[in-house]
Image (cartoon, rainbow, N blue to C red; front, side, top):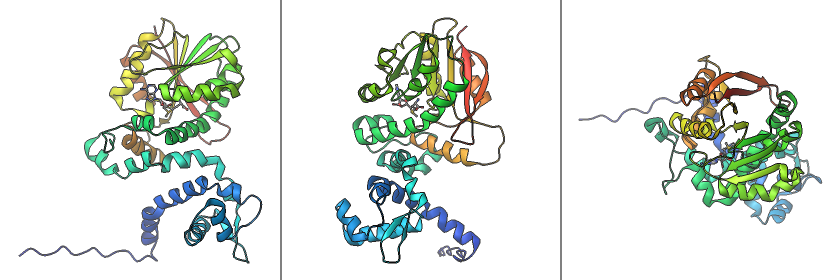
Amino acid sequence: MTSTPKKPALPAHETEAGRTLSHLVYRPWDGQIVAAAVRFDLAGKLAGGPLSAEAFAEEIGGNPRTVGQFLRACGTLGLVEPTECGEFALTELGSSLRWLANMALMQMGEGMWNRMARLHETVLTGRPVRDDRGEELYDYYTRHPRERGWHAAAMADLTEDAGQALAEQYDFEPYQEIVDIGGSMGLLLSKILPAAPHANGTVVDRPQIVEQARAAAGAYGLGDRLSFTGGDFFASDLPKGDLYLLKTVLCDWGDENAERILANAFRCTPPGGKLAVIDWVRSDDPTPSEVDIISISLEVVTGGRIRTEAEFVALLEGVGYRFDGMTTVASRERSRPWYVLRATRP
Ligand SMILES: C[S@@+](CC[C@H](N)C(=O)[O-])C[C@H]1O[C@@H](n2cnc3c(N)ncnc32)[C@H](O)[C@@H]1O
């Protein structure tokens, strides 16, 4: 006779372990509440003063009961607070929502969310999750323009700070043709080109992104100095340049694919040409940290990870580059600097 295993005793909710576990288990919903607050423009709608649940429901065309519940949930997260007369007022936290709005929409969008729901599969297989159509994330984005837009906007938000820091602290003076591989909307080059007076810049990215980027690039005011080319960074011929950039691209890919991207860049670089990899770099310290959470999420959604300097050097030298060193540029907005791994095609 087999006996049914006994359910382990749960820690009481009041204990520290119980509270921590509940927090861990419910925390994902917090992100969805934040993303919904962004979708409904909570910060904008409450900027003029508190609103009742009914008034907010009317603003967004929602069900007054569930809108009321949603606003109370926003209150739990500290985005709004109830007033004495039962309305909801924006808090300081709520009014900062726009700061991470695109990131919230991207992370909580179905492309990422549905993949993260299958994290355990990646742990077992060592491969990124493919969705029910067998698609990887960037192929999924090809068919989902709204989420593709959120992704591009979230990347642009992250990159604005990096571009500013690089423009101020990195010497772009010697270069004439700068190619940003996987450069998305061109934000990095839009910050760098004003600090590179002799240079033109080209962004290479997927054709759908390039189409979007071209339409938006007028706002940079760089005219013909900035151009866009649709292509595949694994295989397409890249424009000739004397400096190639790869920002937050290699972290998306496992070693085999990262090598393919680097080998293709190497093939297209004239002798003496430079490469600057701007990416996350983890220390050799094995103490678990936030970097590990980001790294496992990269493994799941695209098959990437955050690498150490030594791992980057192995990748670069493996395809033929000479590694010239790693520079950090201080960020205005983050406590962590940006890392720049410099290499030359001999
Ligand atoms: C994580 S984003 C980084 C974007 C940009 N470098 C930045 O830091 O803001 C990766 C970029 O790689 C692009 N990408 C993905 N697969 C690609 C491919 N096969 N060929 C060219 N670009 C690709 C994506 O469209 C996206 O813009």
